[in-house]
Every structure is written in structure tokens, then in C-alpha cells.
Length: 357
Image (cartoon, rainbow, N blue to C red; front, side):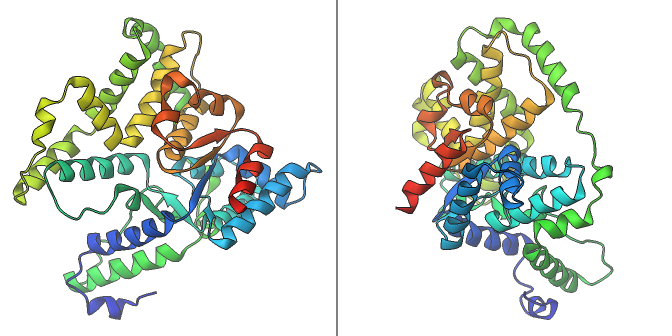
């Protein structure tokens, strides 16, 4: 780890640049690996195989396969903030620690940045690209971090040191966090003090909104459109800031062809540039399209698992209902993304076995 003294010699490198370089290097590493996203059901299943709590050989074989492929550098199993949230809901310290240990082993301590930060990064790349900014790092190199930043970046401030010394301290602290494991993080947190996210309240509100706005359900495409732009509205301040930022830097080569695009063409381009919003809007539109379905709090967590996996991973291992839901042809996720979803440990093993050959 670079020391505070080392960082003092590079006071010309801002903290944001230091963080960005770390994440870009990690992103380049991730681009060469098959990314397998496990929801908590599969982490618990593999934890049971690790602890030999079941006589079922299939999870044990899947675990052995994943371990071999992770060691070879071919595969990685990153997490998201949703995995972390569900991990902290496990009340038994022994099994929670065992799950964290297994995640450390298979994930290499890698996580996606939080949902809102992924959307902001996608917006940033899209606005800068449209304005003609040169030499942008690919967005899929910028959405990966380490587990200590699973809920965002934290940097010490108001330390009492001068600006250069505080900057050196911040960069050294970030380097220290970068090396920490999930087990380190879990050991520092109190499971009983974990906040109630009020997911059931949110689900009830969404169920009521579905009924109140049933007239929107003229087509699945219409619902996806409404959900997408509704989500985008939550980031309008970020969008305005980014536009002002690129114009202040003198990049004003806005895509002239965009003005001649039809509404459908413009929407298609925007969905492609903002995969996190695209997948998440499809999940909520799919719920609204199914007139018989009511959401519960766990469904909202599942939507976030799906959004993380489908936008940036290659294989999603999840429960049967979610694997079926995201594979529905009318959502179009299979056509737009290369992520395969399965609930079957044997099918997952077979997919990975073909990779090994």
C-alpha cells in the first residue's frame, strides 16, 4: 500500500483521479473474466456445500468448479450492495461470517458500485460522448470497486491537517480500504443495528400505484418507456450538472444526427447508454404488465439483483421465479444483454464446465 509520505510527493494528483485510476485498473481486469452473479440463495447454497451441511452433490460440484475457475482467473463472482444488505440480514454470526468468507474467496473483494452511482456513471459517459469528449474510459471499466465501497466512497475530511497533508491522508486511507475484505467489514458492523429499509411499505405503495395508473398498460413497450423516463427524472439534477460541465470544458460537438432521430430511435439509443435504468425499468414494467401480480419487499431486492447482473455480468444464478421473470421474451432483456439467468445448480455447472473445456 502506498504510504502517506509517498502520496505527499504526488499532491498534483487529485483524490477523484486517484480513485478513478484504481477503478479503471480494476475494470480492465474484470473485462477479461466471465462475471457470475450469485444472489443470496446461491451464496447460501454454496455456503452449505462449503460447510458440508448437505449430502446433495450438485452444489458441491458447482462450488468446486467455481473455485477452480476463480483460481485460474477465468471467472469472478462480484457482489452488489443488495447482496451485502441481504448478508447483513442473516442473524446467525457463524453462518454470516462463513458466507462472507466464501464471498471473499469467489469475488476477490469486488463489487459493483451502488445502483445510483452506476446510473450517474452511465449518464456521465453518455453526456461526454454526445458532447464529443475524447478518449473516454468505457463505462464497464468504471462501475467496479471493492467491497468497502459497496455503498459509495467515504473519505476523511476536516482532519485538521493542511490541504496537501489531508489529500495524502485521504488517498492512503482509500488504499487501505481497497485491501480490506468483506469479513473485515462485516466484523466491524452490528447486525442488530442494521436499518429497516421499509421495503414492504414501498411495495404496498407500488401496488397501489399500479392500480391507480392501470390505464398506462396499453403495451409492455409503453410501460418500459414510462418507467425508464420516470427513473431518469430522478437524475435530472445530475444531468443538468453534466451538461454544464462539458460545455464549460469547451466540448460542444453535440451529436447532430440525434436531432433527426425519431422518438423510438432516441429511446433505443438512450436505453443502450443507460443499461442500469434499462434493466430496472423492464423489471418494474414487467410487474405492471402482469395484472395478477402484487409486489412484496423481497421482489424489490430481486429487481436490484437482476439489474446488477443483467447489465454487467454474464451469468445470473438466482431463484426460479426471478430467472423466469427476467427471461420473458416480451421484456426483451435476452435480446439486449448477453447475461443468462438460471435457477438450476446443475445447469450452472454445465455452463461453467463448457467454459473450462
